[in-house]
Image (cartoon, rainbow, N blue to C red; front, side, top):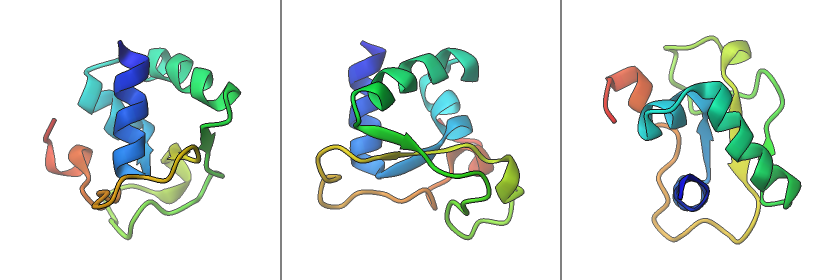
Length: 92
């Protein structure tokens, strides 16, 4: 189930940080990486290069943020960018 939820989340948001997804899915980051690897192997997700800024939020150092982007079918219309940072605002 997490694979489809993760796929839908990344499709909707376009890109997201590992930490944001860990908060959203209430999962350990290392376990989440395994699910992300599934989509990376299928060519649907890619890990963005270290230092890629997520959105202009200054809460995190860009070199410490692990970002993933959906590269499969285009994100849905009305996709929310990473500026809707759950980690920074303490939301889930």
